[in-house]
Image 1: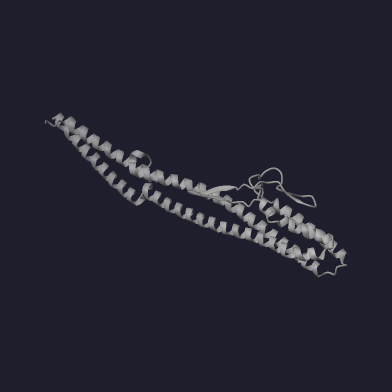
Image 2: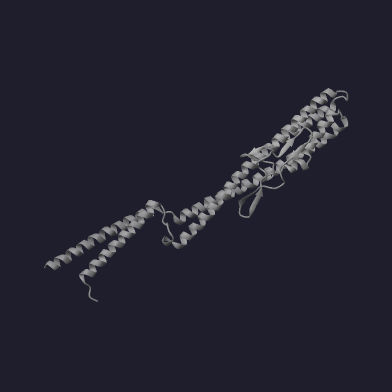
Length: 294
């Protein structure tokens, strides 16, 4: 095949164009910090990056759910702790009342008022909120307060449904304590019975109430222990997700981020090759022109 001057010139110019394209691509990887920006750059790497990003995004959603759940649980635990203390205060009152003589009805009447105050405080704690949602109302977290007290009986107006949060793959957790558990465990009734015993100056009923009230305190403590265990479980899940995301971010960076030192070295080599190609093309074209003039 006959090699013409025009063929030589065209090939030289095509090589220069390829060198320019290579330099441009390297400049893009340096300026963006990414060596993979679209599927055509590296189909396998792009697919791996997409999977990493999807998992990282999903884990972030789980972490947001965990953050909300931990806030709810910590509010619940703090409230239960206050309730436990107030019930123990009521027990102290019962112990003092049991030591009074049978004819000291005035003191016991005053103590009945103190117990009534404790019941009202417990009802108020039972109506506690987290982010404007009732903690102990089941899923009826808005609207009417879950507990009401008319001086004789505590009414529960919530439901017995759990509030669930998905905090990991195949891990849904109920983060709430339904207020019905307070009613089922006779926590309010034990104090109301003590109040009535004090009002009636009933020494036997007052003595019997002491163990009942202690049982109520134990029930609250048991609930809080379960809440603490759940909080520890969520903390472990949170740490695992955070560690997983850190690892995935590292894998993602290794897959698609530019190695700056390598890219700059590559660009310098491409630039040298480009300048050499320009010089070679210039010399070749000048020589052809001179030959033509001759």
